[in-house]
Length: 337
View (tube, one colour):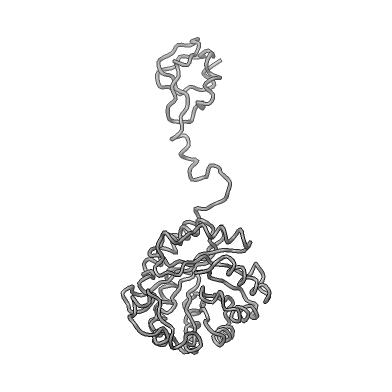
């Protein structure tokens, strides 16, 4: 199995503080994630002054406008250059999802070679066309989407020059946190079959079981929010992983990758030494004299399995013992004529 690309989603869990953002980078690096991802936006270009908050955002940040909330937790563009440089220092790939056209160009100028499109932009045709025009790899989240909307967005990207080999779509549910009954991991297979491109999974459930399961089901990319502290004020902290959980998720995914193996069913080297111990071979039930004609009542199948296989019992019955044998002795081919 190829290595799963693990995106540790810092998002806006830095609460607008550069020090916290760098701590998040440290955590993602120490957890051995492949990428740490932020969100880049000029709030006034993304949200109108009368846009309301989602219910989960109200639960975490109280009443007020969405614009005011985003203003409190966003960075000026030049901060992302500092964060990119810090990622280089910590040996982890920097990524940020742009939410407006100025941010797209800024991040492109920073040298990002992957563009992650958030679920909310899947119907934003001008945005999709802009991303496609850059000609870099694209990861498209599909939360809240119907199949026809995903197909339409993919066509925009492909018409803009993004080939299938440079495109990954992420199954996603954008409720924070996502109820397990609404995850629908089987939809990944539907997307893969329908579009013939790489699929992955962006997770908003509580815990780490679902993203690990997604890898076992074929996800090539996993994206998951994490935070310094789930009790911090902010829209996404509560539905994010703790630093320990992030580390455990990465380890779990890497273990699953190893466990997937190949499609061939055969005895492995590690279990070969256990075959004789766990399997059975033909033994004799009682003491038998040389010249005895062997019958089924003379035989018993017991461990260890380093003698004649029980599958060969029919070939043994009716044969003559070539020597005396004692109870519980393993029968050998040299013992019969």
